[in-house]
Image 1 (cartoon, rainbow, N blue to C red):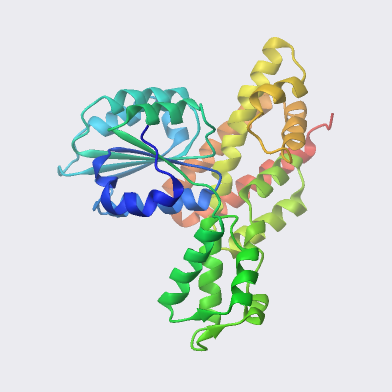
Image 2: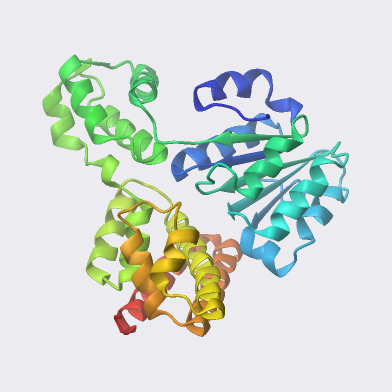
Length: 348
């Protein structure tokens, strides 16, 4: 089974990453997924700023053109050389699974594929397809950092600035980070900048400068959107932006949520089943805290309205790719509009 355990990633990156052509990076820690995808991309040696060598796609792009991933992987670059195809926002889309299954058996001598996905449970078709490919593809899970990983992250970041940290300060810091790798790293760097030149960080420094990064969650923002709670949405987004976590991650997560709602609502209408029964089957992987929110959204959004909103979110994702300088503004405006749409929905 070609799967790399979380604690094995550093060794894999240095010794074995070059042996594979397809990399599936998945898990609930979106920051860690994004960070590890970037590390693999950097390890490839391909210039990330070369548009002829790097093709970045959102899963919505593949939905419009199901054969595009295969075409991109098998085409020859304009100036030859290695190519990198980077897909974001994946789940268990059939067209993506079929493309990965085909490409894992094809000869990819000059193309590498990185796929960023959400939390794929054991048995998920995309995960199974990659794991079954063995020598051609590898699956890399990304779960929230445990104590050992957080301490290593703290040591790496602080040592780079020549800083030490007292046991009490370390304990306080670990308690405040860990929900998202990028958010945690940014909080530690902020602390290091604040304490530059003092030698050793004490617990009062942590209390003065560190926010609760463990509470920063893209899911909180998405739940606020589905609930139509604009105040909670703006509060969640303030946390996310202050941690320097990409707003695009929220847009991406919201799109995936509406794609799931679309599938659930279709089955609900086709089989004449109540929302609660659909949640027992297709909502089993959701965290228990989120289930009532998703169930309420399933009741209040019609199939037509879900489809319309999904298309609007996909269009916004495309706009952020075409006009990257306006990425945050486009994402925020779109997400706030979706929040207001949710607020107008009748509550069952």
